[in-house]
Length: 328
Ligand SMILES: [Zn+2]
Image (cartoon, helix red, strand yellow):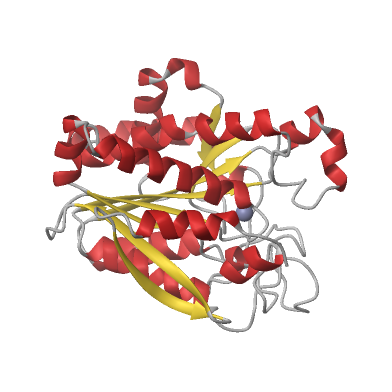
C-alpha cells in the first residue's frame, strides 16, 4: 500500500461549494464518487469526464483532478465560464477503479480489467489475450464473469446523465498506448464505422481548425489499432443512443506513455513507470498539456448546436470519415 494523493485531492474538490457529489458504489469499503458542476436544469448539454478505469494509469485521474481544480478556481471570477455553466453541466468520476488505484494495478481487486468487462464480444480478427480473456483473473485483460460494481457505477452514472441531457459528450482519460496522444471514438469491438461518424468528423475538423498548433492529437476510431471484447464505451454508446433522441458521443484520451519512456528509459523499472511521467518537469507538462482539449470539449458541449451537422451535411461528412479512417 502507498499514499494516494488523488484521494485527498478529490475530497477537496467534492466539498467545494459549487460541486454536488454522491457515492455511486463502494468497493472493498472504498467509495466511488460522482461530481456534478453547473446547471441543475433538466435537458441541458452535458460533458461527462472520467478517469482511473485502470488503477495504474494514475496520470489520467491527475490530469482530470487538476483541470477540475482549475475550472472551479476560474469560476470565482470568470463571467463567461459562469454563463457557460448556467446552460450546461459537467458530470465526472475521476477515480473509477478505486481498488486498482489502491493496489497500483490495472485490474480491480477482483482481477477484472474494466475495459474488457462490458457484455460485448469483439468480432474477429482480434489478438488473444489482449482483446480480453475469461481463462483466469491472474492473467492480464481478464473480462470477469459478471459486470463489476465499478462498471455498473459508470454505466448508471452515464445513463442517468444522458437521460437528463439533450446532448452529451464524454471523455475517458487513459495512458499507456504508443508514443502519440490519441483521441479514440467507437468502435473497439469491430472495424465498422459508428452511426455518428459524421459528428466525429465535424468535431475533429472543428478542433483542428481552431487549434492548429495542437496537432499532436491523433483523432481516430480505436479499432484502427486493435479490437477488444467488453469495451464499456462501445456498450454505453450503443445503449445510450437507442434510448432517446439525444446523442452520446464518447471519446477516450490515450496519452502516449512510450514517449515518456523513450526520454527516461530508467522509469521502465519503476512502479507506474510504464504509464506515468516520472520526472517532475515532465509530469507538470503532461498535467497542463491536456487542459486545452478539456476546455474545448466543455465549449463544444455548451454550443453543440453551432457545430453538430444537420441532416443535409451528415451524408458528405460520413463519406469523408470513411475515406479518412476506413478505406485501408
Ligand atoms: Zn487504460
